[in-house]
Length: 424
Image 1 (cartoon, rainbow, N blue to C red):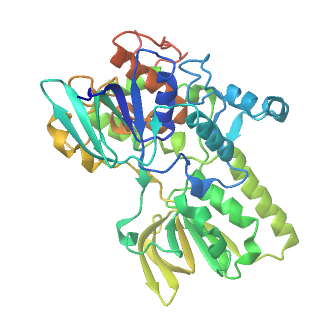
Image 2: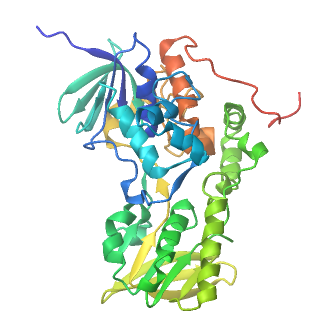
Image 3: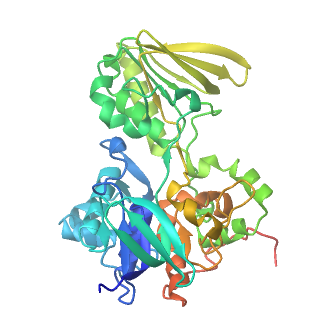
């Protein structure tokens, strides 16, 4: 009779966060792990791998270094393996290109045998007597003592646009898949205020004469604001600040998050400068098709008629509605969390808050037994750092210390010069 394999950890979803977890687990011999994903391979936002675009975190904030700087999976080891280490040093740019970050992640995938693609989680069950979980997939049923759910976020599409998605109306996540067709249009409109919107605008601005009727960028924000990147502000991307934020009550957390957009949704300062410099340079020549940028404009509806798209906006400061007609609209409207259907059978095992969101413990578990953990689904409890790639190794160190039952990873504390709470 075949013995049932019981994994110590099964990770569901293989994005950068669970891939980082797999990389850290790979160096812990006592752990028997499996990581699964329904996709056929690792490809990080392929529709946004625009040439020249960069991450908003430095190279040392890779998948492992801030938890285990000696890991063979750190970014410098990747560069050495690809014979690009000297070039990287000469280049003197701390911020990795999106394309090279994707290659780095794929390099790690190739070295970890516990990763399985084309394996879709369909349902999870819990076996009370054995205190283990069963994960039923399209390939087989697996069993584990612990589960780490890292399925990532999905594009946030306004409800009025959900049934309009096409080559003429799509989310920014699919930009490169539509770019060839988009360049044949007379007018293009981008809606959104963050880094992706800016990257796409800058990419199209370089070929603005393709659009005889104009290239347009609308945002509901008061301005095209840069990500705040001063040193004392960066102290908020630390375990110290997560501890502080977690200690606050839910109402205060919500209020604080509403004021922190520029800490994680802003545009690179250098990219804003590049956009302005290119606009200025083109303005000197004065032979380009029209370009317009608009702030305080909130998109309220989209209508399609005879291959033209009508966007209905509200100008927030004038409190007046207006319409804008375009051939193509790119919705750079961000991403949102999703609660997977496969956890329905274990709903009673999971802690929920009054808004039916995960009630996430400080160690990122969402049950009472430290058996089920989440990645990047805890902004409402742990703060804006939930989605920060640089904090992935820290979160994974916390999760693994909890699972192992001892501090395998030494987690730094008292990092910040400033105090976020009441002076002691």
